[in-house]
Amino acid sequence: MNNIIIDDLHFELMLDYEQIQKRIRLIGIDINLRFEDKHPVFIGVLNGCFMFMADLMKQVHIPCEMSFVKLASYTGKDAGQVHELIGVGMSLEGRHVVVVEDIVDTGNSLVHTIEALEKLGVASISVATLLMKPACLLYSFDNIMYVGFEIEPEFVVGYGLDYNGQCRNLQHIYRQYDPESTEKRS
Image 1 (cartoon, helix red, strand yellow):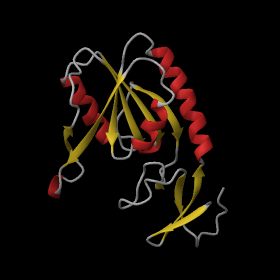
Image 2 (cartoon, one colour):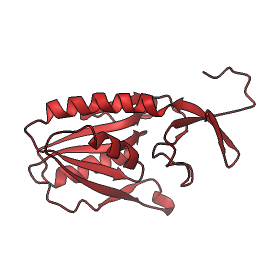
Image 3 (cartoon, helix red, strand yellow):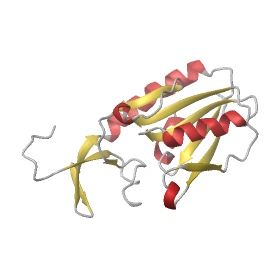
């Protein structure tokens, strides 16, 4: 399936499942070496990370633990402000934490996640993200250690990423395009 339509928006194939899996295998190898004797805790940020986290954990062959968190955001006049990290469920004091994200866009939610984890007294924080949009970043991060793919500031769906709750289940990643555009798409 190369193109899909969701609520009158057009999307074309950007990254296929095999490309994604190859990159995840390489990230897994690096994590196995870097955290070999550290017994890290992988913290997946829901909802979008679920597919990436599941496939990544299949490539991690060292002793580790996993948990998931959900970020709650303000609504109304403070819309977009993240205010709570829900669901860690274990002590992280003194632990090496790998935050698993589906996408780092502006970095707003990642800043909050890192600040919340630092308050818990973790030993270190590393970030693994499937996608990153460098042109959209509002912050500088020195702990994003693993990036699957850097992408342009475009709207993407699939492989955990959604549009109005739809398409998280797709195994490929698609980007939005304008079918009326005369530009040739790659």
